[in-house]
Image (tube, rainbow, N blue to C red; front, side, top):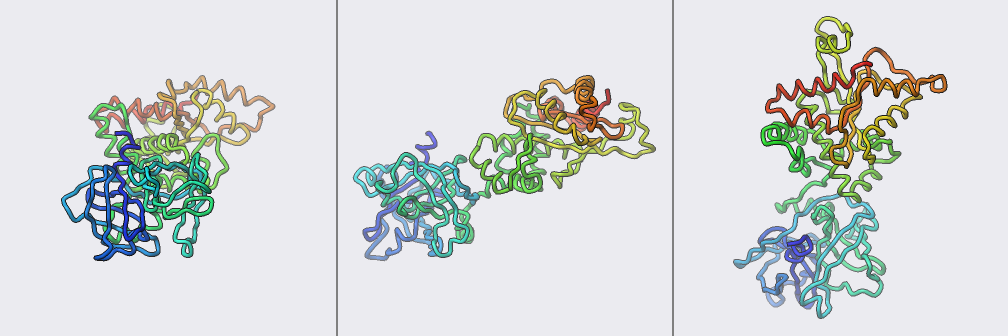
Length: 432
C-alpha cells in the first residue's frame, strides 16, 4: 500500500444534520473531525459515518473543543480500522509540503473522495480570534473556483507521514486549518497519542542510526544512542549552534534554520542521524556533550606523550575539543582544504578536531595525513597570509563521521571501540 493509499484508507466521510465533512482514524476505534461538522448531533440527528469503502460505522461523540473546532468520535460497534494516522505537534513553518484526502460535496467526492496537496503559506501566532492558526495553499488548483465544501475534518499530512493540522474551512484565497500543536493540550487531556516535533527529540531518528553495522557493534552503539536521545535533541543543538551546524557557516536564525530543515526532509534526516551517531561515539568515550559548543573528549597524558612527545606532566589529561559540521559538498579533501583556508586569517584552536558529515555515502575515505595538513599550512602561511598561525604544540585534526564509524563497526566491545577511537583522534591531531 502506497502512502497515498494508506492515507485514503485512514479517512472517512461524515454527515450530521445536513452538514457534510470528513474525518480520519487515529487508532482502530477513534476518529478525529471538526466539531462544526457534528455540532448538531442528537437522538434525531445521529452521526452518519462511512469508511473509504463506504462501509457504515456507528460512532458517538466523546469530547469536543470549541476553541480548536475539534471533535473526538469513538466507534461503538465491532468495527476496527486497520489503517490510522499518527498525530504530531510539529512546528508550522511556511513552504512545508502536505497532502490530504477528504470527501467534498461533489458527486464523485462523496462517493470515492478526492486527494489534495499543497504547502503551508503562513502561521498565525495568536489564533484566539480565528480558531485556525495555519493558512495553506493548494497545488495546481484555483482556490477561488475549486469546491472544498466537505473537506472539513480532513488531515494535513507532512513529509514524515504525520498529521500536523486539520482542515477547517475555505477562506477567499486559501484553506485554513487548526494545527495539532494548538490542539495538543485538549487531545493529550483525553489520552490521545501525539508525537513530539521531529526536532524536539532524537527518538524519530533512533531506528536509523548505525545502518550497516553488524548486530553486536550495532547493539553496543544503540545503547549510547538511546542515552544521548534522552538528554539532547536537535532543537537544543540548533539553538546552541544556529548556522554553525553547517560548513560554510550560514547566517540564519533558529526559526529560519528550522524552516529550512522542515522543507528538506532528506537532508534534515541525514543531519540528525549523523549527530546522533557522532554524540554516541562521544558518549562511548565518556566525553562531555551537554553543550554543543563545548563537546570534548579526554586523551590520556601517557598516550599523548608517546604520540606527540609533549610532556603534559604527571597524570594530567589532555582535553580535545570536537566540532561536528554538515557540508553539502561531496568531496572530503576539498572540504578539508576549504575549512583550513577559511580559518587562515584567524587561528585554528589547538587541541581541536573537526568532524565533517555529508549526504554522500562513505564520505571521508582515508583520514588526512600529517603531510597533507602540513602542505596546506605551508601553502597558506606565506608572507601574503602571515596572519595564519596554529597556537601551541598540539596540532588540529580533521576527520569525517565515516572515519569514526569505520573504527567502531569492527568492534565487539566497548574497550576495543574506545581504543580504536582514541587512536583515530590521536593520529588525526599528530604533528607533521
